[in-house]
Image (cartoon, rainbow, N blue to C red; front, side, top):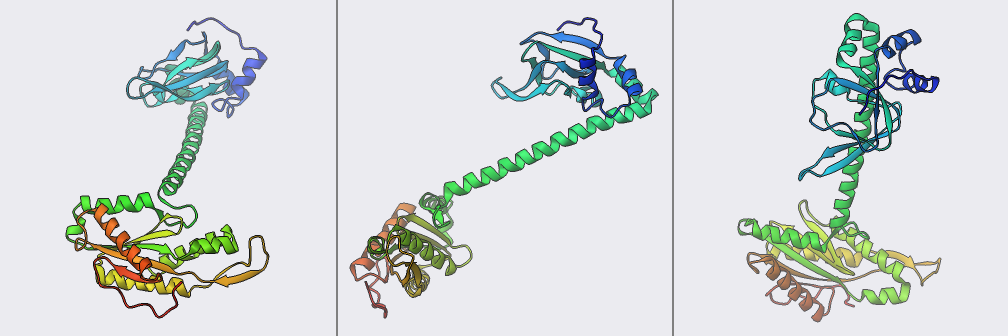
Amino acid sequence: MSQTAKSLSPNDEGVLTGSPLFSPLSKLEFDAVAACLEYRYIAKNSQVFSEGDPGKELFILLSGELNAYVTQSGGIQRWMFNIRAGDFFGEMSIIADEPRSATIIAKVDSELMVLKDTDFYHFVSRHPMIGVKLLKAIGDVQNTWLEQNSRHLNDLMRWGETARKRAITDDLTGLYNRRFLEGLIKNRFEQGIVQVRNIALLMMDLDKVHAINETYGTQAGDKVIIAVAETIQQHLRNGDIAARFSGDEFAVLLQDTNDDDGRVVAERIRAAVFLRKIPVAQSPGSNEETVISVQVSIGVAAAPADAGDAESLMLRADEALLKAKNLGRNRVEVADSLPCPPPETETA
């Protein structure tokens, strides 16, 4: 960085008076401050100052462009923002006596105007109107920066929440996905929760849903999946977790529930699914609608009574589901239980 004499051209003066720092000043006030400014030239790739340096100067970029970097763990420098003509920086070091918070490097050959801390406080103490305007300008820029970063952080938080939600939910139904539910079940065992609080797992499979896709189209199939998901949710208790495993397969984790109570919840869901009427197109691409119903087979297993780990619990519930399908569908079966009485409704 070199320091040379420089008289301000009309263009230079326009840049400075247009700066957020000096724009509130009158012509006389600006002239008084400008008389105290020092000119400095900084060559491309040279540093203005380094992160952690003590600072006694405030800078206004007259021409060129600067980059600000902060040091991450491992000593890696991360780019933070650009500084362009008219921007000021370094003010916190002279206001709060703080070390430099970033490293500033010239992206191209650049010109700076410098206001030393002694001159800054001279205006604050001897010319309070100028001092107040300078401090207010700094405060306004800080507030704007904080608001922008707050919005940015809020956007990041919303994006992060959206990404997290998409990672654990099924796009079509809004239920949790298989990965989430399987992880939750494993957690219940790993944390020892299952030893003191029973859990039951319902594994569900829609009966002959492929025939619906073939007859009415895949959009009808999606409507059926969504309707069944809604029905399942409507018949759960607080704390119960529903998930779509894949295609027409669903699962529900019931808290504080044994085999018998799990059967009751499963039967409630089975009956509600069977009774729900779902409007779909009469045929693929048709504008005419018809109403259809669907049936579901459900297998129930509980822990710790039926299984000692997550994999065994899911396997036992799957075995009970297979039994329900083999015994005629549209029914509930419990792991290692006697066959349920056949439901009063028609089977597929």
